Image (cartoon, rainbow, N blue to C red; front, side, top):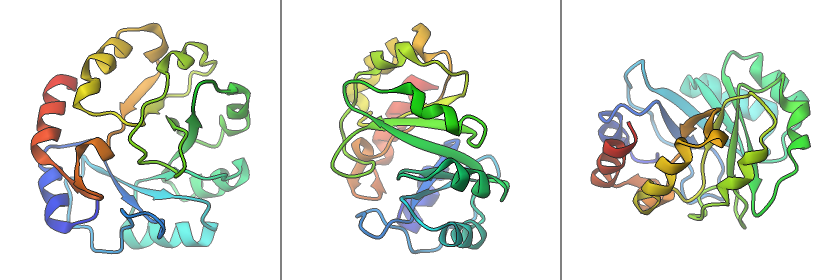
Length: 198
C-alpha cells in the first residue's frame, strides 16, 4: 500500500494484513501516513536487509504488527526483531526447486514463512512458482503463499488449497496483479478475488 485514500478503501474490504514497503529502490516504497485502521487489520512492514535499528524505528513509528523480511536476514536478526513483539514473517524465494533445510535455523525465531517467486527483485515480480514444490514442505510452521497471484490464478489457488501441501498455508499474499500502478490497488479486482477466496 502507498496512497492514503487507497489504503482506507482497501481496509474496507477487511483484509487480515496490509503491507507497507520500507525499501527505497522499490516503486512501492512507503513514506506517508498510515490512516487509522480497524484493529482486525494487521499492519505489516516489508524490509530488505535493513539494520535492526532501522526496522525497529519503523515498527515504533508506524505501530507495525508484523514484519516481512525479504532479504538475507539471519536467524539472530529475526530473534532480535521478534523480541519487539511483532509477528516475524521470513520470506524465501523459490524458482523450480527449493532446499527446505535452510528453514531449520529460522523455525524458532519466526512466526511464519512466506514463499515467493524468485526473480530479479525481492517481491512484486508478478510470476508464480511451481507450488508442487511444497509437496516436500517438512515443517508445521504456517506459511504465506505469494508470487504472481491474480484473478487468472483463482482455479489454481482453490485447487492448491484442497491439496495436502496446503495443510499449513495460513494466508494468500497478493500484490502486483491487483494494481493499477505500483502501490495503488484496484478495488474491483480485490473484491472479485475475495468473493472466491473467503
